[in-house]
Image 1 (spheres, rainbow, N blue to C red):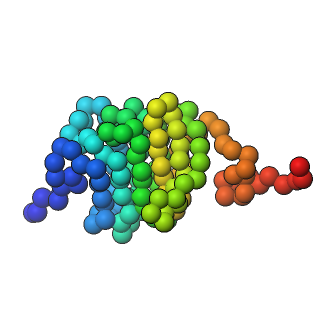
Image 2: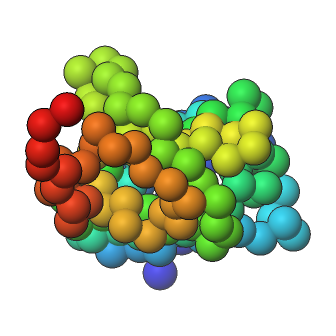
Length: 141
């Protein structure tokens, strides 16, 4: 039986890519695991539907900048285990659009194709009530 290929081949890495994986669930919420640090981008794009579970303290411990960008596609899911995330802005990086969330000193950028309903956000912006999140704001000012 072949051993699975490493996700990241050295302790410091800036990108984790799950391109060759089928359905995976990557949990980034365990402080006991310090083998993966220096992460700036996690790409959960793959042949199956992939889930990334994280929290702000682990994101801060794993990222050298305090910002983590999550790439993926339809069917992929990002979930946070801690509450208090605030939706901040929509931003475009290298022609990919991301929703950006903040919590304390941490920034999480999640590609808009990814299901973000599991991010425990404490607020939303009224100008984003376009029906995408289940709400629409109609009226005149």
